[in-house]
Length: 362
Image (cartoon, rainbow, N blue to C red):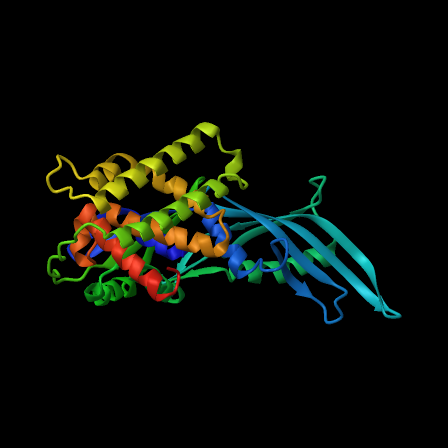
């Protein structure tokens, strides 16, 4: 899902059939990759090493990620024990708790299909900020930590099926081949770490032949509109719940009020565009909303969605990514059938509702 969000971002046209996306990846998203690949035990813990007797181990927990001077810094809580088993009991010879900080340089590999994070430095401190000076533990940390954290990757080859599957519900069936070609062409082009996000350049190739003009989309039927309103209400309720979860509950009330207000505006604009004939109106309500509001609300929604349970977060981010696609790729819409208008939104919503019905969610 992380890679799905990457497909839709700020666009720079490079040459006729090639497009470069300049994608800021928030460090919260990088942390989610770490957690999903490595910190899979209870309390966001990664057991990086243990002996065969379950007497000695090295645990990292609760990773915090930020960028500084072109590199990524990851701070972990550490719990290490080296013990011996005597008379059926584990006797700790050395036990230590503290903080481990790794500095990692983002690197492109495998002809631009992988993004890795090799370690450039490791430092361990106790809770009084004194450097670790236990030789045996220092060796263990170097041996166990560096290979595990350096093995974390963003792999486009692994992500392609997920990207296509996530976007397929929003695309007409006759555009499926064009979507697959676009996803297959994805490559990392550049990467750099700044203080706020990991900036990644992603390149893809657009289909050379222009597809036929999409069919006219009538307003939603009463049944379709009911399903849409139920879906939107559920998303809005889960958003309200996410605002009360850390770290979003620490955001200013003014910022949260703005998000609530813009969600209400989005619901009103989308409902109008889906249910009313807008051809005779001076302005398309969906276009008006995107022009004035989506660039502000989308980052807030993405941040809020990461605080939801995994399944809800995935579906929520998928909807946001698809809507981002309409917003950002409007001038390239013919390639995959996206269109920034009430017509385009009706098409996307219908495709999504069909997918939800087929999967049994409706």
